[in-house]
Image 1: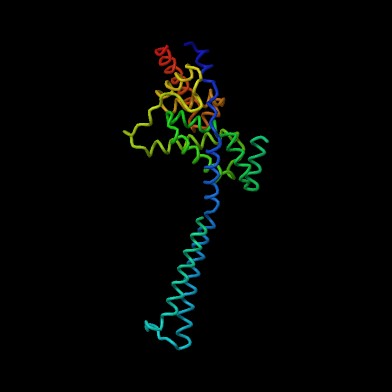
Image 2: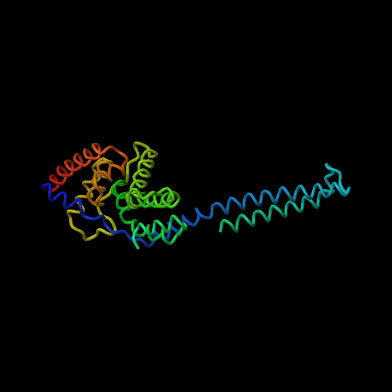
Length: 98
Length: 172
């Protein structure tokens, strides 16, 4: 093979590749990347919500004198609210993931 | 719409549709380059191509237009390949390739022989030849893409061509 033949062979354009699936996958990855800040925000929001509600429950209960901190039996309502908040946070997270 | 206008739209308004059009226009070349570098490993080449375009999307605001958009993509693709090659264990071989691709069925035997011969070159030689010949970059652009001195690029091209001549000569 001489130089000219080799150059001509090397200069052959690379084979065309099917764009369909590749493009769809890429767009999905970009969409996931773009949704990342929203996901992080959802995590932070959930965390803040949890802390605020928990603090409000405990503070509210102790302020009205229904419960002394450390009295387990009367912490049932705040604990239930806390559980509810956790469930809500998990739901928010799942919806953001989708 | 050409690359320049699409890049402008993608940069200014983070227009995903414009970037998608850019990706569609350039995907074949980027995947082809990576296919040569990975010696025909389709899955790996496509993974690296996806990473290349995702990185391009993330960093598109850093694209200053000093080179063409495609050259910028080739540079990202080549550096992605090098990063992946460094991570791969030294004794872990790349997939063996018989020189055919899904789109190359029925193409000339010479083409298949070339792809087989390319497999025997060092990645830098294969990249230099692909960038300079198949993708039509100037030596300066190819050296810039591979981030190597111009002299080194020329020696890769020279050495690659000599090796190919010997390999293809033996085959014929």
